[in-house]
Length: 308
Image (cartoon, rainbow, N blue to C red; front, side):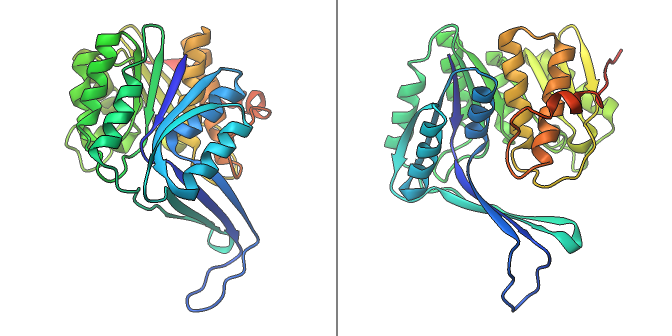
């Protein structure tokens, strides 16, 4: 079974407006309310690929109840630890006359030691042949050191661990041989002490270093340029599809969920990367995550090549 883990879920309010001016009432063209959080998005993507999974996480208030309700309606089993304060609400606003997207992302609710321990107990129940996909930021009170705790549990219980989070402490998990690490270009650059994103050749060297230190697979998102996949025997690059960007929230999660789904169903690395890139692009071209209907069309734009 695949389990997703979201330590800072959210409801996203996605707004579309022609213009946005200060000190006046700005009337919007449309809005959408979305159950979100990076691991939650991975759960939705896996489900849309026909892959059963369980959404784990931590959150509170009426907002986590809404997220649970949406997951239930999608027939996704979920098991969240509840905290006192409400789970956050984020706001993404697309301003048409500027062709810009504004992102307002809030902190998560306070989490205490007992709640964290309750969550770890759930993770300790995972066994060999299970996969845990941990994504996103952490709510207040959850320290990045929890990554090493979870990685130790994965090694002891022999389940596969997937990590998609920006914390530098990801490097501390490499000795436990995580199954897949998915940084974007900014995150991996910061892990190696760089203030700016280097060229693709350097990014590939960094990815290979993550493999050398213990990661089994590395998927580096390059945003609108595509992605690089690296393991011990191959390096692949694929471009992203072109289209009108509507909402970038969830695009990286879509790529991860699609790629993970391809790994467990036996797609070749090249076909898997092509589909994951097309799916991630399709999510960026609409208000919410892809339903995969346009993915075969977008795949025709994508070329995946081997890097020597």
